[in-house]
Length: 324
Image (cartoon, rainbow, N blue to C red; front, side):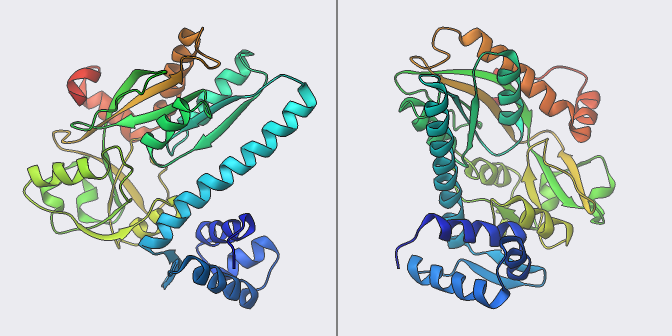
């Protein structure tokens, strides 16, 4: 069986629902039919995509790998269809194509560029890997992208791509709200040595390698019990107390999850905006940078843990010193 887009949509629907039954309801199928479809898809890929848990089903490490690429393929297909429709409707009016790592900042940026009248339309593509996003910018598939890098893993721009740092922020930790370590305002990384962690696969740009390096400096090697890039399974694992996770300061909190800073800020990440110098922003990068900086401020202003951290810190973050 050849894998088609509809098969990729099934895989993503199951991952998003966290349950075969809920996914079947959502796509108008039945549980037996969807179970059989998933089994056929697994045979086509040659590996197990999901395993059962107490909460439903969760992706395997192989399943996470397939999911990340399936989402990229589906996003590209959707963008292709939208762009083709706009080309036909608007003649030579091409939408501005934005990319971004997971999170809401790229959506904030798209809203600001769209509202400013800078572009007739703005399309958004998300990718797990910053390196992949830079490749898409270099190849002209994206006009600009929000990316991130980490201490000791600094991104380098390819020819034809400009790269501008926006801001740096510490990496926090997401932990079950009833965990004893969650009772304070911050947690020492070394005190988490015995915990089970959930991490994503390598993004090709330094994550989670930089986290593992920070753990080594704290005197331990993290016990990785789960691998996930999917938000909903990640939240459920953390809330159930089955694992803890490093996270961005804007990680969406839910009941049962506490977001805490780490004592001494042992790990940082930096946001950057990249753009194709021959693309839509080649002649007006100032407008892109201003919109990206405003989008970053709006995104982080919504984070109560980050605002508390800033109040305790009492000084602005130095981007260069944080990443080095």
